[in-house]
Image (cartoon, rainbow, N blue to C red; front, top):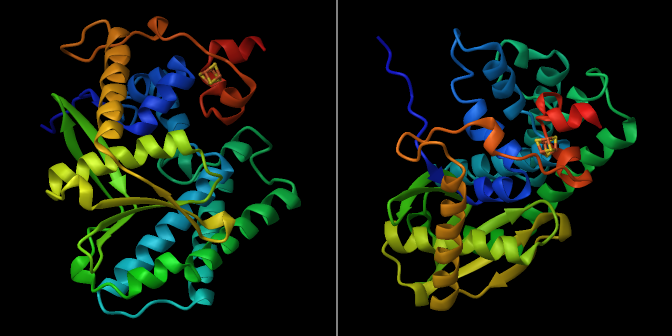
Length: 310
Ligand code: SF4
């Protein structure tokens, strides 16, 4: 008999952000939807699992840019040559067309992991205003253009791929006894033995959030790659801002403070559990925190009691 997956407690930057913005959305995402992929799952669990996989349009576009970059860099590492800008853009557009078709055909009804776009799901499920689709397409093409012409890519191309780290691969490390998930977009060791950690961004710059995210990556690099802190450089590359690179200095006091933030976030999350040992949670312990921004972006609207009342 197939063993059921266990819902083990872990931490990530995105998990912490969701918990801080709305505990109820956090509950739906990490507890209520758990097991919703099983054929015999209760209806509510299946519904939450399907909703959990919905992405807002801008986030979907961002994931297409990230996937296209990952594929291009991996192809280059395999010795297949680096795609021209037009090929990169065509690759991204093909992914957009495929995703869009999955979404309007509602393939997620049978396969919840297929593309499901928030604005469509909570709209007429057939189409969106032309300006909206044109603008998201333009955003993806602009980001690919900025990536292809960026100084960061030029540096990467000059670095032998043996100096590259695995591209955008989900992995874990531990802070105290808690498993921390992270996926570094790209990292390489330069000729000066500096480990450059890069995060591609398709939105605007939020320094506090990115500082925390990059500091987690530095903790990972020190534990997994045994790279000393003084030889780590962290950068955000803003693809919707011409590929502008923003450097984030990393110092011991930053890492201490980020570790403290992680531990207090873990403590707050665990404080809501009904049984920490088994990672058991009950919906009522996770209050709804509605706000125009949170709810507009939230895939769980149709399941949320607060939203029903609005
Ligand atoms: S709809 Fe709003 S209040 Fe409800 S879970 Fe989502 S963010 Fe929270």
